[in-house]
Length: 157
Image (cartoon, rainbow, N blue to C red; front, side, top):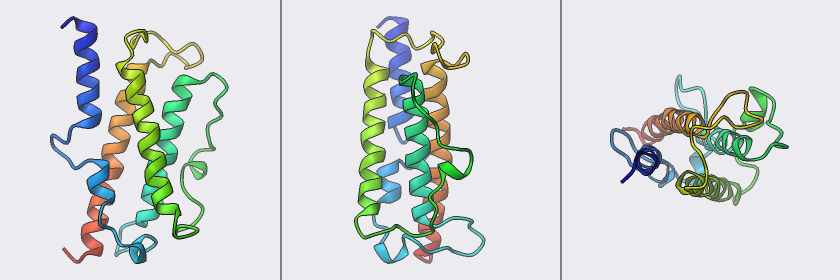
């Protein structure tokens, strides 16, 4: 395996292996719909808010990296849903599916040997695909951890 392949493998592992934390699917699984919009104690967000923040921010990081005409939502308000609760019964699953779809698309980019992970993104203010992957991994890990903590608190653990 050459260094380029090794780097891609390491990034993929960072984004897809649990290692020291739970992954997205485990975090969102088993949260009953009646708790999607519920706050607990001093935890600042509801499960819905955390899920949507994960989806929106991941979408922004990924598509900023890939499309020169991408327009990022305003910060911070545009990266959080406007409500504590999902707008309807289907919104939770749509948000989960959107997160997964964007995540898989980005993994395809990371796996693509024609993409130079270390080259500055032309419109990216010096950012590279490697940097974007690291930011994505860090951001997702942080907020997935918050979601797991909230899930446990809401379940009374």
